[in-house]
Image (cartoon, rainbow, N blue to C red):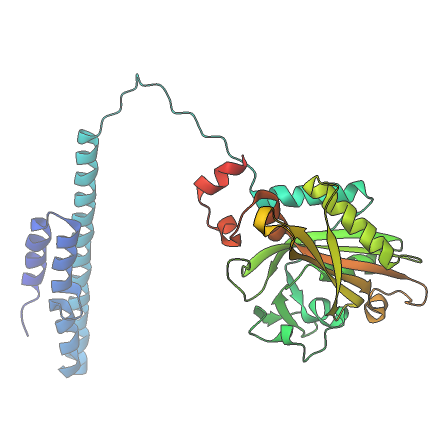
Length: 338
């Protein structure tokens, strides 16, 4: 077996001759790499008797520590040399005027969220917030979504590995509707609340994102009808878009947590695009099963609920045609909203 002393000497010479970090790492491989000199010495230990293996192994480890120390010294020397060269070549003219910090701005989705909250507050609604990781009871079961509902599949929902204290699965909430149940179980009617916030679904294209923002609304009392839903949501859109001539249509649809249910469409566009309809919300009378999960008697209380995508409202208000622009953090795009 070769003498170990020459390995330290060879490493000292090799590391000292390296003038760039990349060269130094190449030299390191000759000694500490998988085919390096010290690695070969370690592999050769297996053929020695036990007592001799202990002595030789200790010597190899000592040499390895010396080589690693030489390597760190060489790395520090190269880093110091690079810093000195940078300081020598880069100069700062202290007589130049300072550069002012650019003013930031509120993100358009945040701007829209605040606008929506302000409008509903003016109509007597509270604003509620809650957890983004929900158990499946609040996210699905309490909202009358059965266990075999498609939204519970892995293709539609982000599941979390852990479970809650009752052993129930946890998910990244697919809507802010769970806050309707949480809020209603903590308050007594009349209940008027909206719940804006982040939601998550396995979906991504020009009008969908895996993470997006939604606002849910709920009004529960003893005599809240579909007419109240139409009045509240129409008033909201007229104030949001600052246009009293907005055209809406309430189209029959199906949602497990409302009955009857509608999709609310808004006419938009001008010129050749005038008169086109775009879905802007899902809504309806709260299902009796959901009322019971609120802890209320559906024979005594009724009301409506709705859900709207905040990015979609932002796209319509600001004329943005691709939802993904809101999340790319391109300052050229975001700077337009200052």
